[in-house]
Amino acid sequence: MTGPIVGSAEAFIPDRLDATLVLVRHGESEFIVEGRFQGQAETPLSPTGLRQAALLAERLAHPHDPPALPVPTGPLREVVHSPLRRTAQTAEAILAQRAGAPPARPEPGLLEIGQGEWEGLHRDDITARYGEILAKWRREPLTAWAPGGESITEVQARLRPALAGILSRLAEGGVPGTLDRSQVAGYMDEAPTDPWSIAVGHDGVFKVALLTLFDLPLERFWMWTMDLAAITVVEFRAGRPVLRAHNLTGHLTTVLDEAAQEAQEARSRSGAL
Image (cartoon, rainbow, N blue to C red):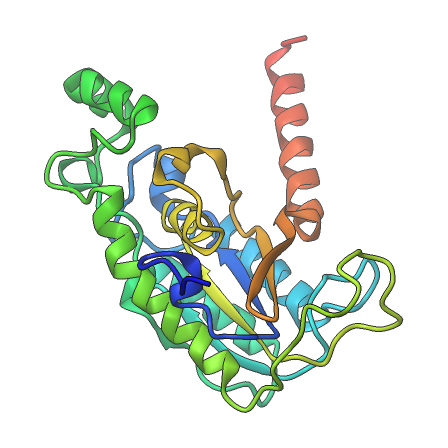
């Protein structure tokens, strides 16, 4: 039997790891409100983003309240985040709801994809000035990217060791798992007691993270998406990654309802149908 393929997920997921990694996207930022491309540019959370982060934190503080999140009852090992301000603020909100949790740790490997000359520009300006490159980036993400920015391949090269470190720390002190158990949901009497960690990052870098964890080709970059302040849960069963939940946003209902109400009131004031 051959060993793990170099560069494959098996090469950096600890053998027989039983644990869970929760991926969390940051809340709405000021650049998003303004319609600007972000990349690695610094921009704080907007007032709405701060509310999203608070609701997200409340959900993660009580993950087993119905409807329960598919996370273990074991200890929260760590909260890591991209060093950018919008993710740090989101991580701080999460920790504010979890007394006794270890302090959040910035992880440079979780930085958003560098967008080079596009960072800080309004999307309309980018379309006008870089329309051809932008169109190719959306169709062929391995052959085109922002001038002066990062390619997806470069992002994966810095992200892979960051993921390896997060998973290695999850494995420390844990009990090795086995695949000789039911792999079908609904047959477990109670949530597992394995450790889990939270990683706070960005839509772009999490696209690459999911492709990397599930050993999928980078050409499928656009197959994933994560909404603002959304939750994705990846469980590891004896080292095998399992997507338990993706892009959960039910905890944001209050904000979404208020936004819909404001839009309705604006239409009423304008006389629009």
